[in-house]
Structure formats: C-alpha cells, structure tokens
Length: 427
Image (cartoon, rainbow, N blue to C red; front, side, top):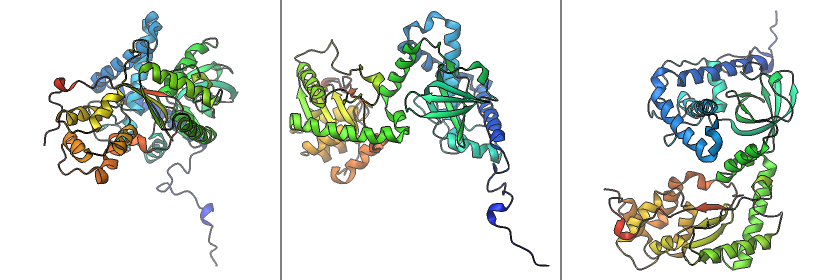
C-alpha cells in the first residue's frame, strides 16, 4: 500500500505552533473578552488596592483639570476615575513608572510596585498568551462614532484616525442592542485577528453632546498627533504638508528659527500662517484642531525677548519659551553655572532633543565640556556621543512622525544661576 503525503496546508493545526489554530473567530473573540475580564480582576485584587488608589488619584486630577463640571455627578465621576485607573494599569502602566500588566505578562517590563510587580497567580494558557501579544502596545484608545450594527458587532468610526473598526460586543458588558448609529463613544479597543473587542465598557456620550467629544479629540491630538497616523493616507499627506510648510518658513524668514519678543514671535506666526494659507495650514488634516492656538499667552511680557519660533522639517512648528536662556547656555564664553543650567534642561521633558541638536550645531565652541560636566561623564565628546545622548533622552524623537500641531515648549522652570543647587550628577 502506497502512502500519499498530505500537503502541509491540509494538516491539522499544531497546537504548539499555533495554539489558536483550532479556534473559530467567534471562539477567539469570546476567549479574548474573558481574558480582558481576568486582567481587570487581577488589578482589582486587594493586594493592589494601594496602587489602584494612587493611579485613581492621578486620573481624578486629570479629569477635573480637563472638565471642571466633572464633579457635578460625584458617583459617575468616581466610577469613571476607577475605570480609567484600572485601564491604565492593565494597558498603559502606572503613571510615571510604566510597565503595564500586559507587558509584564509578556516579560517585557521589570517589576515596579504592587500593581507593577510580577503578576503572581495569573497563569495564561498558550492560546491566551497568543491573544495577548497584539495587545502589547495597548490597542486603540480614542473617540468613536457608531456607524453600523451587524449581528454581534458594532462598526465604529474613529474620530482621530478616520478609520473604521468592527468591534465584537457578544461577551462584553455593552451589547449591540444598547448601541445605535450616531452614538459617540470613548474607550479602548483591542485587536483579535481582523476584529476587535472592547477593553472595558466604553463610555457613551449623549448624541447631542458632541462638544465634549470634540474637546476630547482635541486634547489627545494636541498632545500627540500619532493616533491620526494609523491611517496611512493621513500620514503621507502630513509628511507632504509639513515639508511644504518647512520650505515656506525658510523662504519667509531665511532661516528655520526666528527669535525675539513675544509680540514679534506672534507677528511672525501670523505672517507664516498667512503665507501657507488656509486651509493648507498645520491643522488642515484635523479640522477639530483648526481653532486651537499655542501662542504666548496674555500674561507674557510683549517686550520679553525670550521667545523663538522654529520649524523642523519633520516635527513641524514649535514655539519655545525662554529660548534665550537656552541659547545662552550653549554660547561662549564658558561659565561654571552653564552645566548646572543644562543639567536641569536635560531633565525637562518640555525641551525637545532636536532643539538641543540645533543649538549644538550653531554653537559648537564648548560642547564637550558643557555636556560632559552636565551629565557627569568625563571624556564626553559631542561628535561621538551627542546623538546617542539625545536619542536616549527622548527615544520618540527618532520617529519620522510629522508634527501636525504647533506645540509649545515651556522652559520657565529653568532657574537663575544663583538658585541652582544640588542638581549636578555625582560621579
């Protein structure tokens, strides 16, 4: 008897190689929904109460800062704060610490604290671990509009990236029967193959309350436009737009940087805006942001010469407060207080690394001694070590994601020389 070989694609799936191979899509979605519920239950264990309370304190402060009316319904506010805190611990990690529960389960983050320690007692099957891997980066957090309902799925249009997501509702706490086309939602969704599930019960806004939805979209995209770049069309157009604006900025001012008083910088911004025209401006791809401006506020002294307006070929337009101080640190002559000032600047997340690179390029006189002393690294050589220092300080700066929103860097925390004490690193 001759044995006929079976093509590899007709063989039964190997559970060790593909633990999800025997599961239907519905089975995978059901298992993923239950897995998410297990992660939430783990974070809410009594052993994690202190960490949850700390995270809730942070989330609560942000809610009140962004929505002064949030305290009108304390019970609803407390529920939203707790949900937000738990969601962050599962998918983002403790504020200022990092290391989400998902990342720790996948073995990518070190222990941090009670909620950030090794997740003892949470044992995953091979199929659950395979489902967990695509959640490493937190899925998609944002604002959505329900556009259609198909059986146990809701079709959601993301207001940030302009893409649609088919979300399974069969095992979640919000059923498709509770949804309706035109209903605005906010929440996190997680990928399961080509489909998605809700990370938790999404928050549904009243259909007529679009002002709060737009405000939420603006808040997210003003801090980082990256969510919009999940859409490849938006990313390609943004790159073209920022490159066009960079050429326009240089043509208008003869340089990539304009420095001067608050009133002068304001005037330069308005001239640049007029030059690029409307709607072909920094906000053209995100209409909700078109009326958002990050300019010197009314409290700024119009004669203060600390401001600068700078345009990066990829990162876009940036307003720099106290730029004159930062330039003074880099220019000759050398003075003992300058490394102290620079050490504080390096620790300030509001100062972009590419701005430090631009200053170093324009003022190279004492970079080795300046940065070597500020970082406590004898033998530091800017030519060999500068790029690595800036990349380590701001890892995201190396991504080629264009800046759609003109951001403001507030460097007002930089103190005068006579107030600088105890900030230099020790050997």
